[in-house]
Image 1 (cartoon, rainbow, N blue to C red):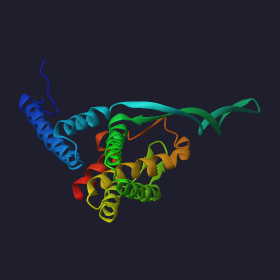
Image 2: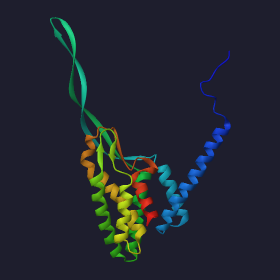
Image 3: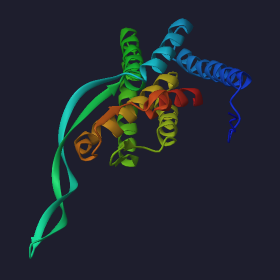
Image 4: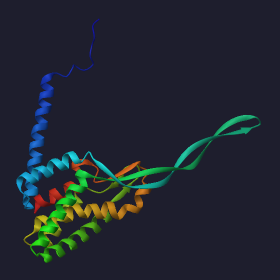
Length: 233
């Protein structure tokens, strides 16, 4: 029997090219992220380890809370008229459980980096930098909250270009000789606090089975906001 293909079978050269493109992309992206971490004073080996943790941790979500929500559903009941059954649709409320989780690569890794920098600054007595960092994070959180929007069935959406730009501006205003860490802290914590935590009360109305903080993978707003902001200062 003779077969005809609408599309020719994909050959080995195509898979080799695809693998080569992946290697090139991985190398370039890892170099960019590692360079950003090094600007924060993190050693190269640790910076590369953090990159791998962010990459593979983006697939891991840790449940932290459970919310009960009621969503409108369409049901059908039978109504008889002169003995003839008629289906009549009506709206009802149905209880659902929604899991709120935190993503390892998109949230916990950035938080650990900020915590490390806070402890390092505290150990050398740079209270002034910590105060400026707190002010910058507070302002960034308010901006993130203002531009974030809960999207039903999806999660909390935020324009990807806003957090890095705000973080860079705040780093230039409050950073002094510590611009990278101010940019990273305001970029990451600004999104985490403003877009996610300040919208916590609205999460149960999203109608999604699970909402993951920092859960869009390595390219999540929390992760990239900090990296882009550090590279721009």
